[in-house]
Length: 91
Image: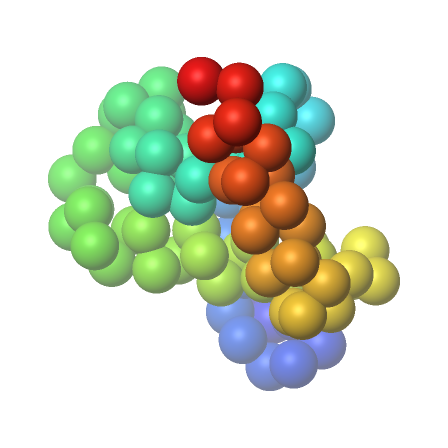
């Protein structure tokens, strides 16, 4: 299905990314780790896909979800930087 921006979005992948983000306990979401985990969990659907191509697709879906939620790119980068800085201090 096409998104408002005209980009093709896999609805199952979109739901799975939303679910992953809901269950993720940290503020910072590592997109590479999310892509690897989703590819392992849903081997039947994504197991044969190229890892880099799948990671890029997950990044696109993540960006679409962030735009839909109202968080812009600068705010997202700031939150990531804050979360990384907080994690360095604790461990």
